[in-house]
Structures are given as structure tokens and as C-alpha cells.
Image 1 (cartoon, one colour):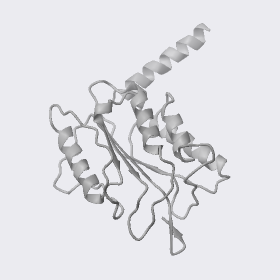
Image 2: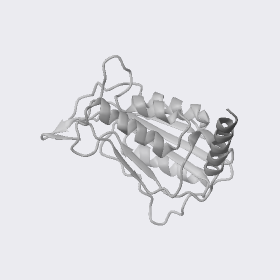
Image 3: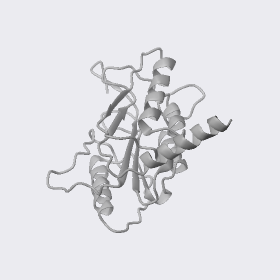
Image 4: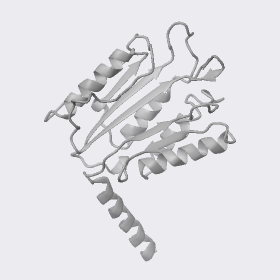
Length: 224
């Protein structure tokens, strides 16, 4: 028991040091399904999608973000017999631990839920609680509710404007984010979150989470 306790304490200290690093750079991009992969939007008896359900569960566990996403993706692969193939791409040069974030780190979330893609498509009947599940998981790991923005059926301009507002706010000494809800707008096209070339890099000790939930549809025999 003594050796086991020492190992646990040592591991916790290692994680605390890693979580407090300010030199970690890069981005993590994860998709519920790779291009051309089959995907289910709903699961019997569940209010969240077959992808969001394990992802929210794994994000609450005391492991790095990459490990949590990899575990969730493996669960999706196993549960769908490899029909649904999630995608993970990362350029991070170090681990991110949500549950051990230092108090000084700025943490901002933009969560977008879309069930109405707009003409000529009909409103979709996807699971309604995916955004709430991810937001709840992030708050449980230390995010402040005041730094969470939620959009429902926004258009591209609304999303890009909010990203610009967040980007400006991260460069200010202090900012109080306001939660926005139920914007009865319409999603027109896919969204690009690339920065303008003349924009400076964000402060070194910041973490921005962008979560998008939209139902899949088929167009010209191709899944989107």
C-alpha cells in the first residue's frame, strides 16, 4: 500500500506540473466521423449521440484530452463494429489536462448546436442534448460557466463574429464572457475558424474549446 500510495502521489505531481505548463502549443481537431464514414446521429434510449455520449464521459476522467478523445474514439469503433470511424488530428507539443488547469489560465468555450441546416434541407431530428452534455463535462473539469457561449442554429456570420469577440477578449487584462442562448438564426454553410493573417497570436496561457453539433445528411449519395 505504501508503494502504491507513493506511485499515485508521484503521478499526481507529474500531472500537476504538466497541466501548469505554459509552453504547450498547437490544436486538437476531432470529428465524430471521418469523410466517407457511416455515422449514427441517435441511439435508442440515449439523449446524446453515440459519439458525444462516450466523449463527455471520457472528458470527465482524470486523463489528458488526447487520451480521453482516443478512448472515446475506440469506444465508438467498438460499438459500431468499425463502421463509424472518428477522426483525430493534433499538433500539440504537450498534454492538456482539463481537470488540473491552473487558475491563471484563460479558458473559453464556444458551443454550437444546429438542427436546422436551412433551405433546401428539412429540420433534422438529432439528439437535442449534445451541447449541454459537453458543456456540463467541461464545467465539471473546471471551466467557468461565465466563459461559455452557447449558440443554437446560428448563421456563419454570428459564429465568426463571436470567435472574433473571444479573440479580442483573450488579449484584454480582464473579460467577463456572457452566455448567449437560443439565437433563432439559420446555418448557411460550413464554418471556417481560421484567423486573419494580420491577427496576432493569442496569449500563451489560454485554452479555447470550439464544439459543433450538427446532424448528418446525405446529398447526391454522399454523407455530409
